[in-house]
Image 1 (tube, helix red, strand yellow):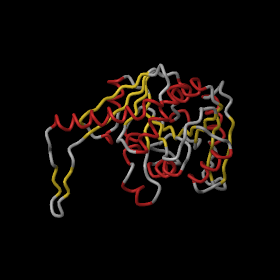
Image 2 (image 1 turned 90 degrees about the vertical axis):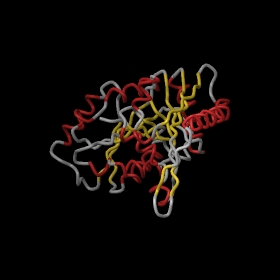
Image 3 (image 1 turned 30 degrees about the vertical axis):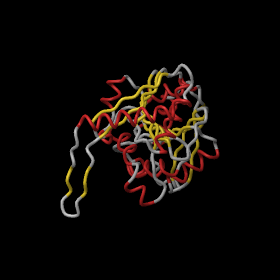
Image 4 (image 1 turned 135 degrees about the vertical axis):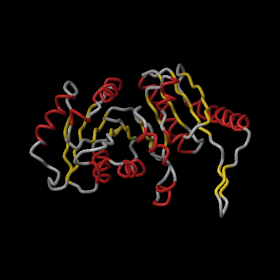
Length: 277
């Protein structure tokens, strides 16, 4: 892995994500961290008619580049020698996903922060990180507001044991494990075997086959609160990174849809890596 893209809105959460990305780049031996800002025309909300105020595009670009330069000067002292830090600004909406930007820059991973922490904020703030994770195909690490980088030595994959072969993105999981040499835990959350099926033992065997050579340890948590269960096990096992797969179908569709990932991102202290099937 050579490049990491870090979208920023210059907030405290974005700064925390950038600092996390620097440390992660050091561990992964990445050569470059790209600080990216997507800027748009500001919206002037009139009580009667919403209107878009369109200032000069060159002015917008200049403001974005200046803000990026200031942001870079603040965070760069925390970056290890040997890792290049570059900046990129574009007129775009961040929530559309970042696949095109990653293709343009050669970035293989996205690291970004998420704001929030109370019910109101969770509804209206910080949706960009979740939108990027949902709409893109590039692996995204979401850094919760209070998360502090710890060297990745313990990784936990949350799995529902449903259509494992068809839906498990083995390659990016293997790449992370190879790059970090981390131990792998697999967590399955259920309540009194409500989601157990005759295929469950076979599916768990298939996952073990896909992850052959990594010697995963399996943990089964009896809990009907997904977020609580993940956080409990992450704390007990001293997990450094949680991997989730936001499935579009399957028995646990409700477990892995955006709201579950959203709640986990807001309330976890452990960074969450979202990888698509």
